[in-house]
Image (tube, rainbow, N blue to C red; front, side, top):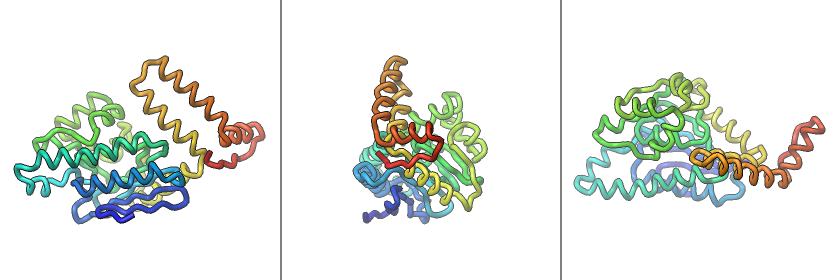
Length: 262
């Protein structure tokens, strides 16, 4: 796949997506948004892909919106932003709904839309020197990138308002303690740790992992009875899959399961 702002490669069941515009701090602009949406569309339709790894080149994971490009747009900025967010938000919607775990490795800073997209990943590994900040109101604008949906769910309303209104900067340690990231590793191990985690998921019971992701998100805003009903339907279906039968048999027989991915 030929893309301008990121690389995409699928191998051994993992789609490896890498942001490749370090000279622009991997900032979000129309080209990046289109590329990310195209990559997630590929993930969605490639049955060989079971998990996704997302990393970035350079010292900044994603600096947020490309303010230089936005400034250059002049009076056309509102339309540019609206068009761009159709793709950027569309990429995040697909990322969230696809039945494949998405693992990200954050190096350096993630600010503004960079923090927003971090909050939308399923699992996040970050380096010890990583920093996180909302930064929107510092530029006189409001949040985007679905941060108002995800960040508050990860860290709580009070902390979300703190980040949004004061532009507080979180260290990697604070981000882990607040629940914004899953684990912190040495800076030089971010890419490897991310790839290994994504590969371990791709090697697992793909149907169960994908549907487990789906029902966890579905349960966020569901009434109790609806969440329970979805759980019941899904686990019953899982027990009828090849991997479901294998997993149960392996547990009973005290051996390592041999997953087929179906």
